[in-house]
Image 1 (cartoon, rainbow, N blue to C red):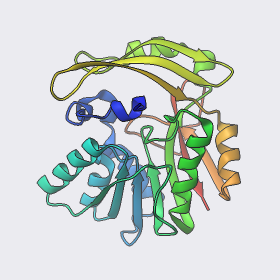
Image 2 (cartoon, rainbow, N blue to C red):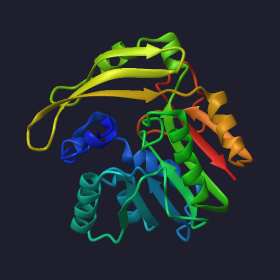
Image 3 (cartoon, rainbow, N blue to C red):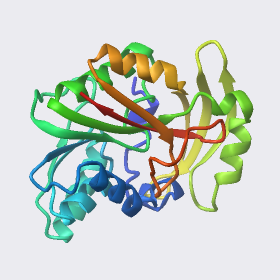
Image 4 (cartoon, rainbow, N blue to C red):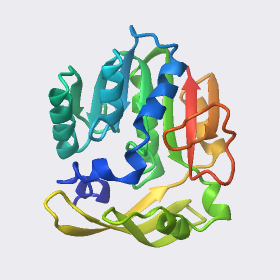
Length: 253
């Protein structure tokens, strides 16, 4: 039986690229460049790269990027897009819980819930952090976003999704947030690239900052900074608050 995050991305690449939450690529890549001092000699891995939007933009800017994703359809689309733009990017199908890399990259990025927080158990989510960390060199840096557990304590996730929904895009309904597990259970309704309407039962894990800090300390990170995550406008000046749906994490080994 396929998990929802496997079924979701089957034949859903072109429509995915039109979703409102994937429109912030340029600003997000500006932040990434700033964080690595625009050093083009660095090797970057994009974990849960989807259709390759960050990997492609960074490659355009002259960086050497490897993109990995669990979905064959997303990787296929990423390769097509890179080819159309004449870019050389190593896109591979891999499960983020079991990556074949060790000490190869200077920077790992994992943005817009690129795998982490979508897994069905906390242990599996931790495996993703562990594998991304293992792929990094000794002084490597890890930049990722994840769902902010402080948000649902003060706001309705259901209302947030309703306010963010746009005509012709995916929709979330029947949201219920579980305080014991910090998981939001919902039904996502969307149309795939062939125009077939689908409905999937999903559940995503929200994390509070202290949990993220503890998990990363366990993995040996020395410096961990957590900020509010604004779509397309990541900044170290954004203090994380209960208003932020996502948090931006920058960790250094």
